[in-house]
Length: 232
Ligand code: ADP
Ligand code: MG
Image 1: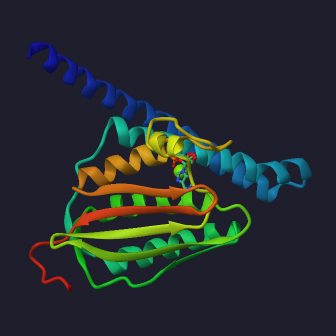
Image 2: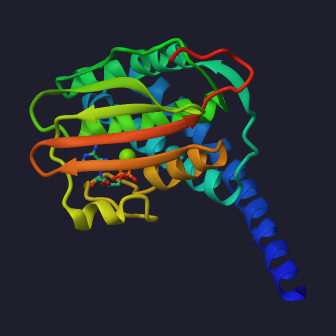
C-alpha cells in the first residue's frame, strides 16, 4: 500500500514536471514562430520566403506533440455539462471541412437528432476532430467522411464517423490507440491514445469497424443527459 502511494506521488511529480517543461519550451517557440512569420512576410530573400511556412508547420507539429503528450501525463478533470449534440457535430464539421478540402474529402453530417449529452464539450470536440482527421488522412485521392447518430440504448447515443479510405487489417486495428503506433510518415501515434482517454474520462466508449480498401467506421458512444427528455 505504501509502495503504491509513493508511486502515485512520483507520477504526479512527473506530470507537473512535464507541464512545467512544456510551458518553458512553448514560450520561446511562440517567439520563434512570430519571428519566422514576420521575416517570411517582409523578406525579399526567396529561399526564406519559400521555407518559412514549412518552418512554421514543423513548429506547430512540435507544439501539437507537446499538447497531446501533456494531456496524457497530466490529464485535466472533464467538466461534464448538458450539451446539444447537434451543435457539437456541426461545429466539428465546420472545423474539419477546410482540412478535408485539401485532401479532396467532403466532411458532412446527417440524421443528427436533437439529443442532449452529458459531456465535456471541448474534450469531445478534440476527440471527434482527431477521429475525423484520421479518416481524411486515410483517403487517397478523394472521398467523404459521413457523420450520423443513432440511439444505442435508453441512456446512450452513438455517433458514427464513416470514411471510405484505406481501412485497416485486424492486426492494425488491434494496435490503434497504443502510444506511438502510426503508419504515417509524419504521424505521432498519439492522436487515438489521447482520444480514447478523453472519451473514457467522460463515460464514453469508442469502437472500430474497418475493412481494407473499403473504409472505416468509428462508433463513439456517449451518455445522454438524464435530466432532459430525449427523442426516441
Ligand atoms: P497518427 O494519426 O499520428 O498516425 P493516431 O493515433 O491518430 O496517430 O492513429 C494511429 C494509426 O491508426 C494511424 O497511423 C493509422 O494507421 C490508423 N488509423 C486511424 N484511423 C484510421 C482510419 N480512419 N482509417 C485507416 N487507418 C486509420
Ligand atoms: Mg491521427
